[in-house]
Amino acid sequence: MKQFTTLLTELTDGILLITINREDKLNALNKTVIAELGEVVDEIYNNPAIKGAIITGKGSKSFVAGADITEFKGMNSEQGKEFAKRGHAVFNKIEMSPKPIVAAVNGFALGGGCELAMACHLRIASENAKFGQPEVKLGLIPGYGGTQRLTQLIGKGKALELLMTGDTIDAACAEKLGLVNDVVQTVELLDVSKALISKIASMAPIAVAEVIQSVYAHFKDGIDGFDIETELFGKCVATEDFVEGTNAFMEKRKARFTGK
Image 1 (tube, rainbow, N blue to C red):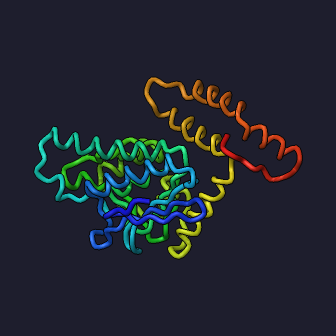
Image 2 (image 1 turned 90 degrees about the vertical axis):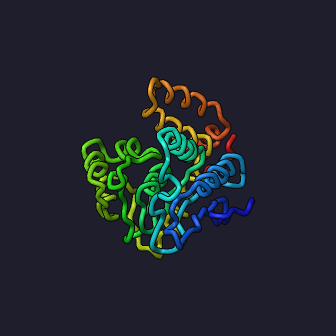
Image 3 (image 1 turned 180 degrees about the horizontal axis):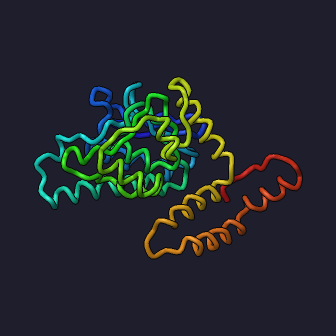
């Protein structure tokens, strides 16, 4: 796999561990990180050896403590719009990955960091994790999908409160609101995340991919999620994995899925 300047990657047992490697900057997102995340997500899509991925931050203090403010200071309106579009493109690619991507949130997940975590399919947080969208304190709004995904995950009322106040919440509150799936001790964070990916990877790959597509269809304008579900249900019925899964169930054995 390609060597990156801002990311560390390690593929073990089908799980790609992606570590944002800017610890001295609390792993803040800059143009290079965004571009390299886009490249590594392409690898997730296209490399059959990868069954799922985990995104985390280097060190114990920060997942991603926001965007690198120095990069967009002084931008005009059109430049700001293009800046946001680049982030949207990469985060949308993460969200629609046919393979599961888990955010292992180790510390601060603020601004763009919270947006990156929300773009992942699932979020596991360490006990010291902190979440927030503090952009209003800078005279901004979230630019990488935060207004949309936060509302989808925790509801309009609480999302508006956090977005308009810029308040930060701890891991326990994030779990209570439904922002994260689980909170674990810091030393357990990667092991729990890997176990979750492994469990999902043991299921039928096509079915997992279609679950992702069906769920996100609910949030797309002009698309009837129920229609998508029936279409993809029909697609799954025609797969070899469906035959294997039903045979394994009736024969009381573990299914051996091939992704066909």
